[in-house]
Image (cartoon, rainbow, N blue to C red):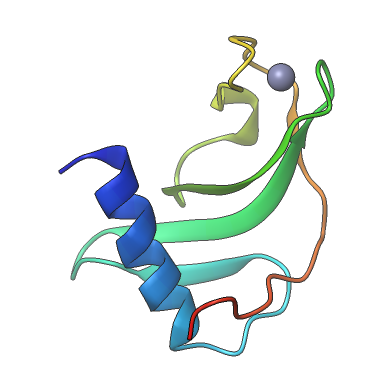
Length: 82
Ligand SMILES: [Zn+2]
């Protein structure tokens, strides 16, 4: 499964919830994922991150290639799907 396909599934999954900030979603039966907006303190790039709940933020990699600069913004994730 490509990353884009995965993101699309996550977006649909978000659609099923009324979301406030970060959330836990069950994409698969045994795989809990966290969905929240994060920002890279190195390049200030923001994006909606989706990662397994056991993943540490400090281990997330930004598009700029830096690891360890990602923090949660606390932004409420609104429902953007029709
Ligand atoms: Zn970055």
